[in-house]
Image 1 (cartoon, rainbow, N blue to C red):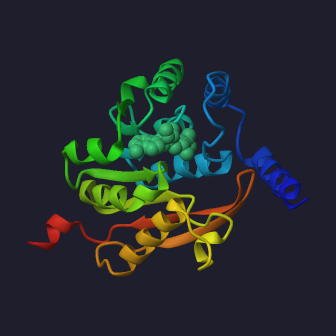
Image 2: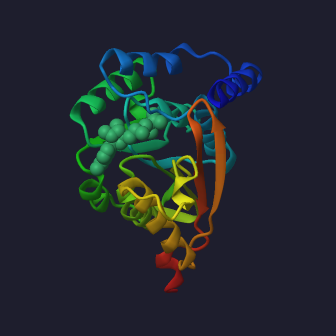
Length: 227
Ligand code: SAM
């Protein structure tokens, strides 16, 4: 099947490019043992986030959607000792598993897990214009709210990544609709009319099927435009 080909291809490339890491593998294992769903980013996207953090020298990061802390750990490994990730998670159980995983991986001093609906927690976070990167990977119907909050917090040329914006190509099929698909469409519509960010969708195929992520750097920070 197509899926077997995609999986094999991811594994092939990863075998050259991603060193086995017991801490990272352990995160999803512990997640599974605790009954968390297997919906973390792919290994390749995890590594991409890690490399992106290094490339842009990110120190302060916002993440929406923690799960067991897999993507969090990929990013935490790349920020400096005095860096900071604030990651938002609805489920107390997920947050608990994530905190334990991050503690075990020796990065808990760099990560704050905030429990509750991110739409309520995010507006309470200060430090407008000081974050370097935001990774949005939670309930897809709230993509636009999270994106606007991320924009507020991001520095000029900071980067927002939004996962799962292709969804087997269904986002582009007018007859297809559900809360997630509509959440992506609202975000795209917003970015189209927004002068403060640019964006491009990178479609991906691999162990997570056919999907893609949006790469959206801010061009100017809203508060700076007033000057
Ligand atoms: N980023 C994680 C990774 O790659 O390891 C995966 C995150 S998983 C796809 C989505 C997470 O978002 C779930 O743990 C879910 O409980 C959480 N979530 C769902 N709705 C949320 C909300 N309203 N606020 C915060 N988190 C939410």
